[in-house]
Image (cartoon, rainbow, N blue to C red):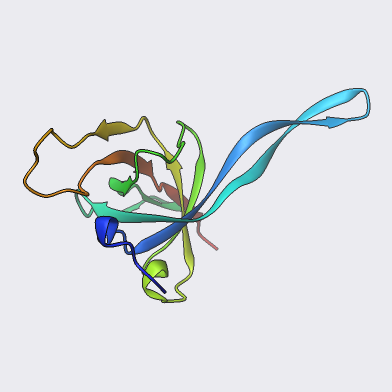
Length: 132
């Protein structure tokens, strides 16, 4: 797989799903539709939280962030499926996240190193697993 040298620090890939109106006869329903696939990105962690146990469930709420090109249209609430190492050819299972509000970072004029402009998206990967 060829990696663009301007953004070769994007080691992961993502597919993005968004709620969209879908006409169904006289009724319009809302469905989650895949809108992008194979987008280069990189997920990183701010902290590694502990699993919180209760009587009937386990709760895990990591505070991961995602970096990708400023050109990618990510909106709050988008469902993001990330394949860690996907851009490097690894076939890892996808991890599901939900997007928060993106912060865009642009390169300053005359920057020392080009190719660092990106957007940073907080991710909610919260999972609740019911005990059996």
